[in-house]
Length: 204
Image (cartoon, rainbow, N blue to C red; front, side, top):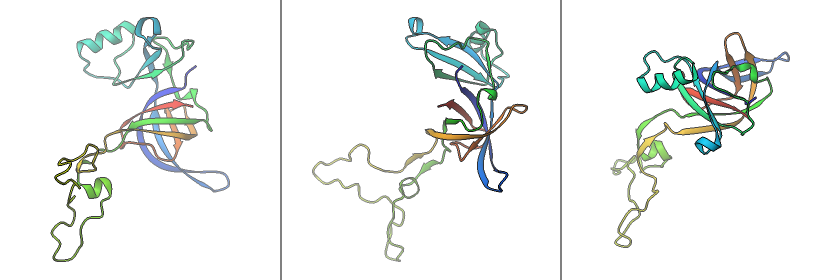
């Protein structure tokens, strides 16, 4: 059985062991997730499983038809996981946190916090100009390093722009505790994204 769940980040806290040692953990409400579709290489070109998490209140007509085909309720978030051709997951199957055990190592996919449009100092850590009275470019990017030759700015130059809100994967996070009654999984350390953002938890 594959180890994969979609969840919502609740926040961070800490746990204490019997010897008094403290462990920072992230609490994630993971699952229950429903298998919506099974993709196979002969028909779709690759082997994968499509999971849904949560409940969508007002799905559109295409979504209704897609979920009706699997005879499951419309989900709020849908994600796809590559699996092997021998995986036994089938539409309608439910996955819970019981598929993980304390001590397992997992990788977590999410989107980093969006910072909006940021300047070079915040986005790339530019040192900026002098703080003296004569300086008029304290946080400005400054010269792009281009002269008559080549007479243009090269692609990939570090400049102001959108910061954050990018796909991030954190590997080798340890499962500290499982709460099956509340569908909670506690992971050692931090995971990408803000509170209430959606995550994909994959077993190693």
